[in-house]
Image 1 (cartoon, rainbow, N blue to C red):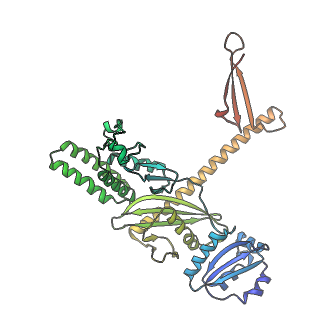
Image 2: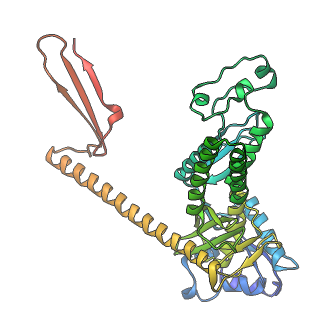
Image 3: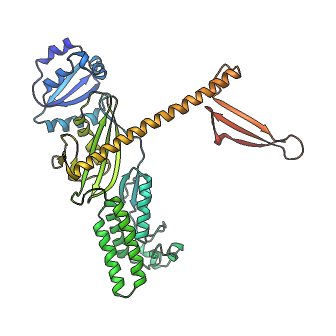
Length: 430
């Protein structure tokens, strides 16, 4: 759409909040946006070209017409814009770049539930906690749970009928005191489920309840003069307190909050998410946003935060952000801290982005160096051997001997100047 064409319709565009759509000649929606004032926002697309980004120029060049919908409030515009983007997936809108496979901790929906990590979420009534971006953190959590609570690891069907009939016998885990033997009815279902509730408290970051559970058990054993059992619980309490202290990175005055920081360059935006529960940092993630237009930081955060909170199952009543934004859920408290612990949290999130970008650039440079090295080797080899094509696939055969008994030969393979171990072969010569 040319500036002259826009001037023809500009008189019909109101100074009201709404949602606008750029369409091409095939009536395909290229871009969806929202505005406090449709008139002002759309006019900005057809201003002086020297002040526009190339992507904006490309959008107006490929568009043949504009549609808009007037709404009552800016909040209504945000909701409608989100709905249109999900429905039409416009090519010029911002998109989440997220090909990662996350890890969850599953509490299986069964009698005497198992606790384990998984990458698949199956809707069978089981409880899933996560997603966790760090497999290392998942291993730490599972190790803590294993030390604190004696849970079964077997996949036996521990139905009441099977246990009553004595179909199972305790395994090694019972004898080394990692399990209390529910398969033989040596542990009641109610006692086991109470431990599962404490596992859920650990995964939710509710450390106070877990600490009380261990302390109460320790006192009970001490009152019954069971000092060895009390000592074991004391050691478990120390393990738990060490884990708790390593998780506490914010003030005790901060409860459940989500922290979002953002940085952008010409092509990408990076959003760091910190999930804080009961004053403890329990999860963190960096999401990359592919920008296709000159989106503002406020718009990017307004788009990304609901998606990220849904992905991480967050119900925190407060979000900490660097700029003023609008969220679909008006009940969420939006805080822009100027000082104090919340400001430190926001600065921590911003530092995480800086480190992420530095690491990403370092990885890209390293990757380019490897590619350049491979190309240089192959080019030299091609020249030395006077070959017409680049030797991308090389096979080398070596015969140890061809006399006597049991002669053998080996084949090594190089692809793109790198060893391909899976293609190595060993032959018996007859």
